[in-house]
Amino acid sequence: QSVLTQPPSVSGAPGQRVTISCTGSSSNIGAGYDVHWYQQLPGAAPKLLIYDNINRALGVPDRFSASKSGTSASLAITGLQAEDEADYYCQSYDTSLSGSGVFGGGTKVTVL
Amino acid sequence: EVQLVQSGAEVKKPGESLKISCKGSDYSFANYWIAWVRQMPGKGLEWMGVIYPDDSDTRYGPAFQGQVTISADKSVSTTYLHWSSLKASDTAIYYCARLVHSGGWCVSWGQGTLVTVSS
View 1: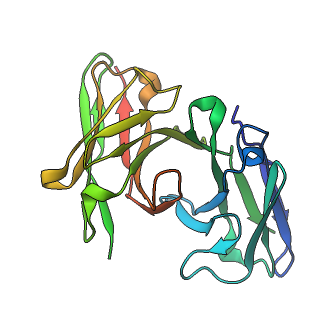
View 2: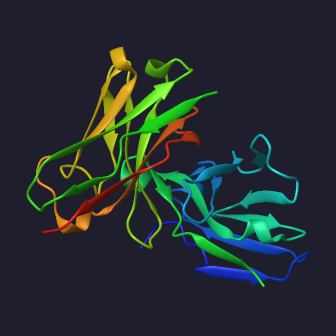
């Protein structure tokens, strides 16, 4: 059970918008730690998608956007494409874990 | 281009020891934190710990303290993950990743090392 909670799965048709939530607490996101997002395509290593809450990594299409508020963060994918089918993870740090990094449980995005 | 290249897949028996590696290239290896991340079969990512190769300052995630040893040899730009006595539950893919700074994001990832522990 991760300290950052994500929905196990979300789905959408091509062209639609989907959002993935990442819910934390006062010891991680709410403590001011930034949130980062990674995409893991099937059979591949994770890849940085978003850093410091809102910034797209180099080469990431602007279809991907993210935000942070209070003890939560979210990732949005607009204009969903077949190639976006992957697992997505949020990541932050947690004071209750001696400042260790933490990942959310991951969300599987399915393109219908 | 920054690269992290990990050692190959391993098949071991319970109780055996193992050390896997992650070699960095095309950047100042000693001056960037490296994280180790576990992914058990069909499961999510888990933060194991981090090391700063320049002085080997190491910080473990609570769940992994005492279970593994993270080390580094900056002279060969390599960090290691070591088990003294493997368990079947150590079966997983292990990734190394370079942090942009302490407390930051994983900007580059290794390709992963599959460790299978089975009798």
